[in-house]
Length: 216
Image 1 (tube, rainbow, N blue to C red):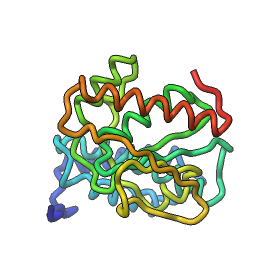
Image 2: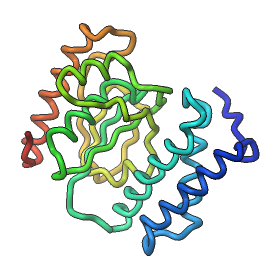
Image 3: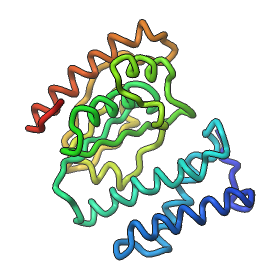
Image 4: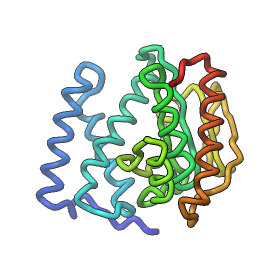
């Protein structure tokens, strides 16, 4: 799809929302990054979602959330770390497998680790069957959203788990890579997604044990 977004096409409401997001990020990352860096990450994040988001009104919010993650990743790359390991789950669309893995990991690891997810060709929305199947186990991933991976996010990760994205998944030296062969839940109903969900749970539990992290 051709990206036809131009910054001049932003509505007044979108401009105001992005300006508010920039101020909030500036306060959050004060002393770490300057206004120019924050604005660049915010607007490039906006551009990533501009041609894919289902509801344009949510674009500033998605841009702010993704820019925040990218800035945390950049801080980690630059040596500012709280010591917690970071695990990155990647698949093609970041709509099913990697989102379920993210949900399981965060649910089990709690505050002991950080988890992110991304896609090589991220979709416009999360697979509803994946959302429903995770909800059956008491885990809400409906607030998550498909997103791309960026260089700083991959470089910040300690472990990168790939799921079916093949050569499209990035490879950087110094990262630990795991490849999980899992069925793609795309176009499947909840009944067919449940076995995938349960296999993802098993693998996440094994990963946490391998990392020496407690799990619920």
